[in-house]
Amino acid sequence: MGPIGSLQLSESIKSPKAATEPAIRVQKLVKKYGDFVAVNDISFSIREGEIFGVIGPNGAGKTTAVECISGLRVPDSGSVSIYGLSPRKDRNKIRKFVGVQLQQSAMPPRLKLGEAVELFASFYSDPLNPNDLLETLGIKDIKNSMFKNLSGGQKQRLSIALALIGNPKIAILDELTTGLDPEARRETWALIEGVRDRGVTVILVTHFMDEAERLCDRLALINHGKLVVLDTPEAIAALAGGNRVRLVPSQPVDDKTLYAIPGVNGVERKERYITVTGTGDLAMSVINSLAKIGVKVSDIEARGGNLDDAFVKLTKEEPSNDSGGVIKP
Amino acid sequence: MTAVGTQDSKSENSGGHFSELLKVEGKLALRTPIGIGTGIGLPLILLIVFGLIGDVEGGTVGNTGLTIIDLWVPTIMVIGFIGISISALPITIVRYREIGWLRRISTTPVPTSRLLAAQLVINLIFALATILIVIFGSELIFGAPLTVGIPYFVISIILSIAEIFSLGLVVAALVPSQTAVQGITGGLFFLLLFLSGLWVQPAQVGGVLATIMYYSPAGAAVQALLYSVFNSPPPYTAIVTMIAYTVIFAFIAIRCFRWE
Image (tube, rainbow over all chains, first blue to last red; front, side):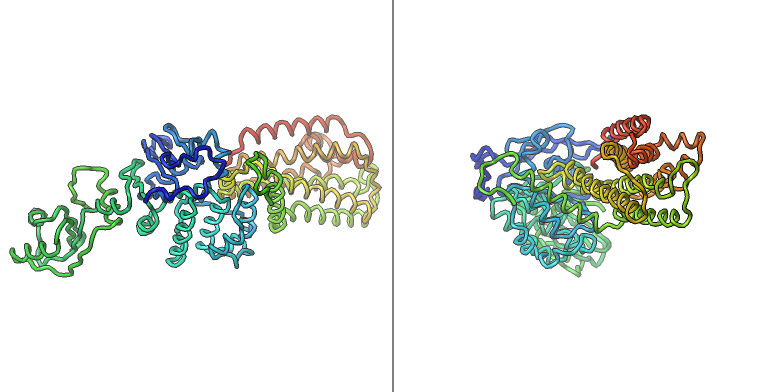
C-alpha cells in the first residue's frame, strides 16, 4: 500500500528524498464559480507511486479539484504543490512530467489516431514509443482511422494514450473507463497497474466503485465540494456498517422493532424490501427475532458491506448528520 | 526525433514539435474541403469565368483602359484571401476551441499559441498558392498583360494578407460557437466579396459607393494590388487604410481571444 519505491525518478525532479515527501500536496483548496462553491477547503497529500482515487457523485467537485492540480484551473485560495512546484507559476516545468486525460475532450474530426499520438510524442523530450503504446492499448491496427470514425471506447483509449505518451511521472486520468465495455475496462485496469508498477503516480477520477476498489491504493471521497473521507478502499468499505441483510417481511414491521434486534444498527426501506445493516450473525439474528413476534421473512439476501454501500451511505448522509445510520429515500 | 541521453536542456525539442504541428495541420487542411474550396477552388473558378467572359466580350471596361480579366485579377486574388481567412481560419480555430482541442494542447509542454501559429502558416501557404495560380493563370492562359512590380506587389500582398487575416482572427476571437461562426462568416464573406468588386468594380459604380468600397478592407487591398500588378506605386490612401485595419483588427483579436 505504501510507496512502491522510486524506480525511475526523473532527473528533472529536484528532491529524490521523496520517501517521506509526498508527490503532490493540496492544502485548503477552494474554487468557486460565482456563488457556487465547487471545491470547499480540501486538503490531502498523494504519495509517490500510488494510485490515488477521487470518487464522489456527479457535480461533487472531483474534476474541478483535479483540474486545479493539473493547472487547468486557478484556485481561489489554497495551494497545490507538485514536487515543490506550483501548477501555475511553474506550469512549463510541470507539463513536462504530468500527463493529463481530460474528461471530455474531442480532437479534430479528420485527425488520424496514429497522427495524434505521434504529434503528442513530439511534444515531449523522452516519449514512449508510439507503436508500443498503441499495441499495449490494443489500438495499433486502427491507427489510420480518423477520430470522427472511432467508437467511444476507441476514443477513450486514444485519450489514455495521449496522457501516457510523454512518459509522465504523474498521470491524471479523469473518467478513465467511461464508455468502455467490460472487457476493455479490465484491460485498461491492467494497463494502469502496469503504469503504476513503473513508478508513475496516478490520480484517478472515477464514479465506478469496482474500479476504485480494484485499482486505488487510497481514495478521497468528495461530496458537495468537501472531502468526506480519505482512506484505503477496504477501510472506506468498512464504514458501510458491516453486514447487510435484505428481506421481505410477511407483515409490516416498524423501525423500532428492528433496531431492538441485537446487532442491528441501520435500517433502510425500499418498496417492499427492508435492508438492515449491522454486525455479527445478522441474518440469523434478524430471522429468529422476527419469528418470535410471528413475522415470517422471504427473499433473504445477505452479504458483507462493500464500497458501493459505503459510497451511498456517506454521500446521502452528508447533508444532515443526525440520521444515525437510517437512510431515508 | 529527440535528443536522447543529453542533460536537461530547455529547448531540447523546440524544432521537432513545430514541424510535426505543421505537418498535421497541413494534412488536416487538405482533408477538410472548406479551406481548399474557398481559398483555392473559388479563385480558380472565378479566374476561368472572368477569363472566358473577357475572351467573349473583348474590349475595355469603361474608361479604365483595362480588359475584364485585367481589372478582375486583384479582386479574384483578394477573394482567395477572404475565403481562407474569413471562412477556413476562424471556423477551424472556433472548432478547436469548442471541442476542447486547444485546452487539450494546453496540458502539454507545447504552448497552445504554437498550434495557432501552425494554422496561420498553413493558411499563408494556401494564400501563396492562390497568388501564384491567379497571376500565372491570368497571364499565361488569358493573356492579361501584367507587369508585376515586385516591390509594390510584395508590399501590397503583405498588407492585404495581414489585414484580411487579422479580420479573420477577430472573428475567431469573438464568435463563441461553431454554429454562430458558420452564420457570421457566411454573411461577412459575401459582404467582403461585394466590397472586393466581384459583382461590380468601384470604377464602374462611382460616387459614395465607390468611396466606401475603396476604404473597405477588401477594396483597399484590391486597389493596392491593381496598381502593383501593372508596376505602379499603390495609392498611399490604400496603404494607410490597410495598415490602419491591420492594427485595429490585430489589437481586437489579441485582446479578445479566448482559449476555452
